Image 1: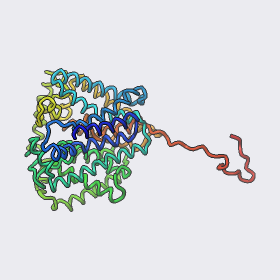
Image 2: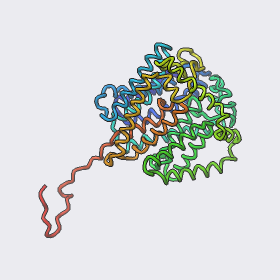
Image 3: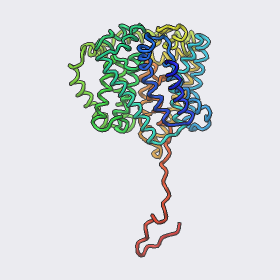
Amino acid sequence: MDWFICLLIAGTGLGLAMTRSNRAIDFVVFVFVFNRGLRRVIDYYVNHGMKPLSPISLTPLLVTGALLIPVILNIQKLPRRAAPVFYCTFLGVIYAFMVGFFRVKIAAIYALAEALAPLALFAYVLLLRPTTEVKNRWMRSFTWAALLASAYGVYQYWVIPPWDAAWLIQSKMYGYMGIPEPTKMTVFSTMAERGPLASFLAFALVPMVVNRKWRALPGLLGWAGVILVGYVIVLTMSRSGVIIAAFGCVTYVFINRGKGFKQVIAGVVVLAAAALLLRDRIPNAEQVIKRFETLQNLEEDGSLKTRIAIMSYGPTQVLRDPQGFGLGAWGLATRVNTGTMENQGTVMDAGWFNIILVYGIPGTLMLAAALVVLWRALDERFRTPQTLDEHVYLGRALFITVLIASLSGNVLMTFSLIWLAFGCGLVVSPLPRRLPMRPDSVPAPRPGQVRRPG
């Protein structure tokens, strides 16, 4: 059953990619968001136990890998101003893979697929050069995925389905994400754990707030969706998720000459009102409040102390190993080598130092070059009225947000809305085609008016 589902999903993704369908982006988004939840259900009901390695977990990497095939075959068709972003990032990833393969062998291959996933999404957008209507639909696909994942997250929090409880125990995350009982655990919804969920929802919440066209639901239902996503971010107990969403919305207004100001103010009012109404209605609300109150006393925060400790030895480690640890040295990829549910390897949850330690000085310089080219291209479109649109605004805001968010975790090279926003922000959408006017549709000249030929 596992391999049948894997081949079905991968085959669908390959077919959409090879025909260069713009629906491939929508498909990839939903595969990425829901594959882990599907895998847990299949393991629980069909396999009667959680497998350390499941082919269903490979589906998001396979479908994004399929996006790279038409990109490589048509590499010369990438937009001239945007192509260097792809080239520099690709070279940085390949360098880190070579270092990682030398160190950890097979695990580096899995990590390579993870690192190429957001880049494949970005490059596929560049290749298609979509219309504004298609770009907006892609944004709504992300927000739909965020809404559905949030709705399931609320169900998970109140009920804790048996497949999620079994996975929590067998993956040995019992305690880290709470007790597998209703309302006594942090929400991870259909994803691997609470951190990736919070990051995904936070970046998806920004376009939902700043532009009504990007909300999955219309009118007041759209604001209800904003409340739902914000509510689940809080239930993940991820302070960085709240900070990313807030900072992204504020940045959107400040760097885009006040664009979206009214929407952001409305979002603040709606979310603040919802927080006041729901504060006393959330079970274990005191734990949630206590978690976020630590922002007022960062000196005693254990998570911050750990990151500072990593940063303190980071420069020494970089000088000792300037080539970097390489891809696959830590995280989920290490399961490929161990064949267990546990992650092995060095823990480096310290944002930019994470990137430097993994990619080394050469790989980091390539990623930095890609970011410089990306910002210059976005800024050029921002300063050109003929090419300026809402996706440029969003791309600029999320660029700044990513720079700040990467101080606490490696959000740059993970699959999220940011790489879609970058691609849509760089691509100039073709103008809608105008049908030629029929001769009988040309208005007749007024009396005394002479019609000029041509």
